[in-house]
Image (cartoon, rainbow, N blue to C red; front, side, top):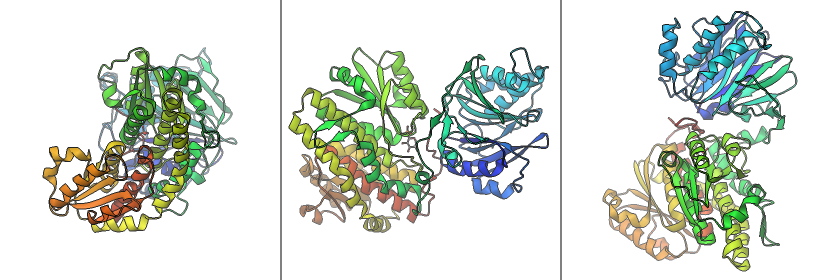
Length: 619
Ligand code: G6P
């Protein structure tokens, strides 16, 4: 949700800002802008639309402009117009700010600032930040005060203390052409430290091309960067030391590598992503699972009374699969709750309740808030997160990283399968410590190790799945139906189709169809069934018959070698067999491909679907 990038170094800032914004564009893409320190002034260029539109209005890079800030926006306060695009200057024109987050008390501050003579050009909450800094800057007389702070730094610090809400900020001042200030609270911010150059950004993708060394400031910290170095301090002016860390992913991982879209690349990366996710964690020979990140919590977890899983979007669907897994394998009472609901529902957290938060980005605002709520009520909170060092990874007591590699496509794919793999490993390990026999656990571990290879075989069907998408491309309403472990996959299949092809789709437990949605079925309406081998197979055959009898078009994901299903399926996708509890990692693959091909056939921008953002850092 909005991407920020800033550069201070020896080279022209503009190319680094633009290339960084392109890498961050998945975070928001309705308007963009840059601000460059140029001849004692801040030169701002901004426009509505994508980074490509911004490039058209930029001047040629100037080697004397070595400090700048940039932004790609996902609108919250104010329409995606040029005026509302960032950077936002203050009313004196000396301060410029790019912001990711939401300022909750902006209304009150705006009224007060106006009464003090500040003027506003936009409808954004961000302009309150630049004006607040501008106000304090105008008040401060000395260039350097008794604390050794210069007036720019002092003004930022005092302004930020007045804000409630969340922010990741990059700030410049025209009187300080060699100073960049970053600050964060609840939104991500990383400072890449290169060879006499610094890149401040919302995430590492905008940094890795320049350096792999970075610091991760904490909430309520400011980082002050000049060409001589950087220092970090709290808003209370206490110095902080942030150790340099190595950024884990490479440039190669975030490039398209011959694929047309990041989403397709990430779908095809799933065998490798799952192998990395499980590598070193499962040992088939020794019949063991090793989960280092939560090792010290596993004993406690064998005695817990209740497990609550909380997440948003696709991660929520992975959590729903986890609910089945924990109940089935470890016999733990498990509930799954949307993070946005959990945080406001006055949840009951008794002794012996463990909360697991699941998130690809590790930055989702609702999930973060749910974690805080659970912690305040005394729960142990574990995280299942992809992005190393992200806010959720840091807010949880312990956790397991997905190690799925960067996910750029807005519609989540490989994170889902990796989340399910991690939940499966946790459930097997807890089950083994409780009620599962060694041989039962051993079978699960062995079967789990075969999943990446089976996914590869499903991926070979991409072209035939494309034909199924093409045959149904004019239909505006689809149903996705599954039972048991595959019910959450039906929800995920419908979400994928909605997100990127803008086709209306509903996911349901197949048996629920007769309680209402069956009324929707009319001639040719596509109904995607997951009818793989398992205890509910016979039941779902009945549901397929019901759709056929009403003229619906059946697209069926079934187990290889199932001859019965052929006469019921208008389109058949056969996948390798696996125990029911491991099937979600397989059955979801054709649904991801179906959504992908439908979106491409409809001519949509798959990696940047309208109105969506990859990382939702607002409520
Ligand atoms: C957004 C994304 C979804 C994602 C959800 C949760 O809505 O578009 O793809 O599933 O956020 O994100 P998280 O990073 O917490 O998994």
